Each structure stands twice: as C-alpha cells, then as structure tokens.
Length: 115
Image 1 (cartoon, rainbow, N blue to C red):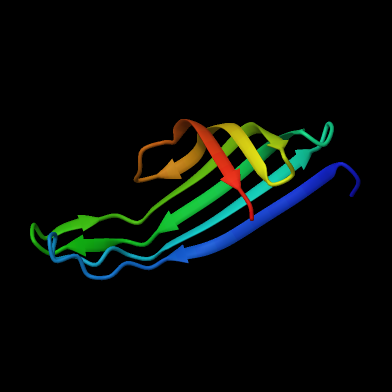
Image 2 (image 1 turned 120 degrees about the horizontal axis):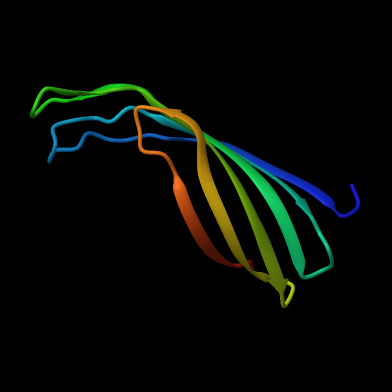
C-alpha cells in the first residue's frame, strides 16, 4: 500500500526432554506484527505488537510446577536499509500485559544481511 507496510509471523517452539532438569518444558506459541512507513528508500520507522504464551509444565527433579505464562508487548523502532541487501534496526519493546513471567523492557539492535 504505497509506503505503508505490514509484516507478521507466527510459530511454535517445541522442546525435547532436558536430562539436566528432568523436565520437558511446554510448547511456546508466538506471533509478531509490524506496521511500518517508508520515509524513503533507507529509513522505515515502525510500530510492533508481539504475543507469546507457554503452557504449564513440571520440573520433575524438584517437583516444581511452572505455571502457564503469557505476555503481550508493544514496541517502536526504525529500520535503516542500505546497499539493497542489508539493514540495521533499533527497537524498544515494553510489556503491555502478562501473567506469570517477567515483563519485557528491552532495547534491541539487529543487523540483517540478505543474499
């Protein structure tokens, strides 16, 4: 839609059994959404919305129950594109809502090279 862009993904993280903790952590589901606006060919600020949830599971060594957890985060960032196949992205993310986990409060830097 012209200079406006939307990207999204969703996925799962499956864990095998951990022999160190005698546990099999529950599967994680995550989804990430970005809406950006290309100011020009090199600069694209964006807003982000991310969600992640993990089911409850038991660490059998200590018989400790790990509660189901979830978090919704929002973020702002800017991607700087150069040489047509490289970019550097700076982004801040903060927890909006969540349960049974630490809230996200992060500043991230990402370099990407596409070939």
